[in-house]
Amino acid sequence: MSGNPSVDVFDLGSEHEQVVFCNDRATGLKAIVAIHSTALGPALGGTRFYPYASTDDAIEDVLNLSRGMSYKAALAGLDLGGGKAVIIGDPATLKTEALLRAYGRFVQSLGGRYYTACDVGTFSVDMDHIARECSFVTGRTTAHGGAGDSSVLTAYGVFQGMRAAAEVVWGAPTLHGRTVGVAGVGKVGRHLVRHLVEDGASVVITDVHQPSVDALVAEHEAVTAVASTDELVARPLDVYAPCALGGALTDEVVEVLSAKVVCGAANNQLAHPGVEKQLEERGILYAPDYCVNAGGLIQVADELEGFSFERAKSRATGIYDTTKAVFELATADGVAPAIAADRLAERRMRDVGRLRSVWLP
Image (cartoon, rainbow, N blue to C red):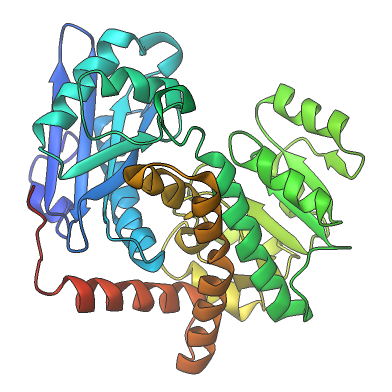
């Protein structure tokens, strides 16, 4: 890419079936759609609207996120593959109906190999705009027959995964009496905080958006706030829940973390390969991110059948059992839970998708 012109683009996304660059000069749209795998069905994954510092950064993010969606869909038992899209730019200044509709035309041109939905920087109303040009959109507003805000069941699923981790560590599937640190209380984190408070946990929060913090502290007596993530992870915690952007679990964080469980909504939490072993060596149980945060995917996938919130919630409740299965395989195979989750997902992609490696409309 720009920093190294000798890099082969096929090496960048060596696991991916397809990477599409979308450019519309009239609206300022610069987007990348990455389809990692359609072995189990058409790829589904959200569109992230974010001011990346460079195209290289955007490519790295979309490749990592789309791979994670393949594993997430497989582990959740869905007949879907993994994809993701990023739109480069600040949504506060660049996002317009015209841009979203131009993006919708690009997604439509893929013929159903990729279904889009909400992610960081995009919302259900944006999906309604995209759907005016595109048939392959989920996560639309309830007014248009959609599932609405997928963060509701994302948070619910993370809570179920946290209950499973609590049962392994403390012998009971509850966070009652525990102290949980939540980094990031935006779309998903604020819903997770409410589940934790209702379960009897004390919650410590932080976020770069101070109004979000202030609102939760005012709403719940059991919620307190700290100024930064660094301050949060240094506090005495039972559970740490990263719910902002990826890469939250660095060497430095793992070194100071007192929590016995890490379970959060953020994607790609491990800053680099090997962090999962460091967590294990420190006696910290890691609930793999794409296992526990699959509730949003389950919610928008249900929309493809004609959305039923109760049916989607029932399926998301199954994240508790899936997380337990990951921990059990990790113990049986003597590996970290992150590796066990990969093995379960890869087994399903291999066994179910072996006769259909590429999905065609």
